[in-house]
Length: 191
Length: 139
Image (tube, chains in turn yellow, blue):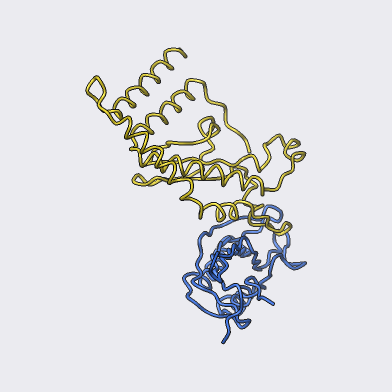
């Protein structure tokens, strides 16, 4: 798959800062759900990658990554990206046409290889070698094991920190202000 | 011997009048020799595959997921075949195959157009959630 031109360090910094700002806008329970879903997504992608067909020689010949290495996951909360692997921030590999609801927390997992769906479903010459669906079906029943501890951790941490700051704002406002300051500092440093 | 959900699904397709009217052979696992041809020689056929089938703990149920590829002569033909397949499985309640295998509520969880990478033949892919009993039901 042709990978688009790599974005500049400034663009990357802006995207990273935006993720921090989006996180700051979520409450502790929402953040816990997002953390848990992201951990679950990573486990499912790792499981799917271990089941995926691997042909390192063919991938090297074509100059593309192996299909097993093209798995990604990301979490959108209230319509904003709040967790995603570095390749998501570094490229335009977000699934085309993806729309996320503005009132939910959504885990999205995908393989960006253009051959992945042929391996999954089969062709007239090749039998299906499903690797993603079995990993998803095996992983989803364990969602609670990821989400509940992550929520507990965020809520416990949030309760300890949920104090009014010296400047009179709340902790959440402080987080947003800090993220904005980091973004400004990055932009200045990169000019 | 436990009946195969794949065999049961193929039998359901073959028993349906809508599918029979298409005159498209239904294959389990892979196309038969001669099914897949090059451009200008495309012919209809349907291939059913097992994609997943995790048994449920403490319940005599297996959550089978089937992939159905409906190969048509044109994209519109493939779509019409896909709709015929959907009519067989989507939102269908509890039933029992002749083999004694029970099927709970089956439905189509994903579907869409596709082109085969080798022959470029248009096809319609359907993913069918097909929960079945793990043993035959005594009657």
